[in-house]
Image (tube, rainbow, N blue to C red; front, side):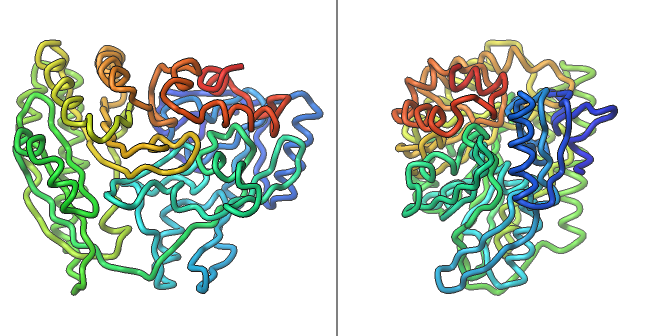
Length: 439
């Protein structure tokens, strides 16, 4: 059981600490058959069913007072097909275990998010993504999946088999069934060279299109109350491998990014007036560095400072304007924000409720240190994001409902119709799905 997402006396809580639930029972199936049986039993008992991974969502997407399924015994690689270059993996497998196992086999995913604590099914069901010019989210790399539906039957789907389920279930929000296995496209292990370094915000905004076009993976962090950003460019490399040394890595990734940053958050929470000064120090703490390593060591980094997060996808063409509005709002608001704003991109995909569905997208993520009041900041940011027809990350804080989603997702009705077909009795319903998909 993940220590980050468990609780005492039957209470479940998420990693961010902002969601709690008391399920009637928790089930830890060791096989797909046991999971299917748990769904059938719950239905007979009139209980709702939710599966939960490591609890890295900030929304109540996995919360239930019914049956909570913990899939951590359903782990490991089921098979690697080197002809079709795919790997099939059980749903409860943490991304960090998948990445390490693939690397041992000389394989890698094409793209990934910036942490790897989540399970593969939790990450894809909520639309987890990294940044990429041509390569999309984890869900966009799925080539097939297996799903236990509301009547306890096991459904397999791909582009050829049950294609309408495949279109939706790759980012299925837990609304269509419990995912039991995923098949991902993989490729031979490759090297990435990361170039990290500071850049003035004005320059990043002025040159954003160029920075995006010239790099396979471009992202940046802007420190509110400053004109500073830290940029990250990841591009494929012929080598040689030049990983970050253990001492330098510890200083950058543990001491500065986690240790000193944690202290700065504590000080900022206790004395908000110190935040702008701390932000200026934080923005200068990380020095420029270049290193070359295998993908998961470049894409991902440890995140030990607990926070709460909101992230919206806006059309990529609108990202610079949206960021200027966000900065103007912060300048006049009197808010004190001690966490950087993260900006990433993804190409359009064909997944029904993917945040990049049908449009090239840019992601703007706002964070607050856990325990700091975040509502005023998130409400003001959300007003800006929604004015640009933003789509919130399904696993991060937002206040949108089905009526809003039906306007910003052209295929929204396609998803709800499929849900009516696969789960007419709403076995997989919870308060969150009632809000975002409608009753």
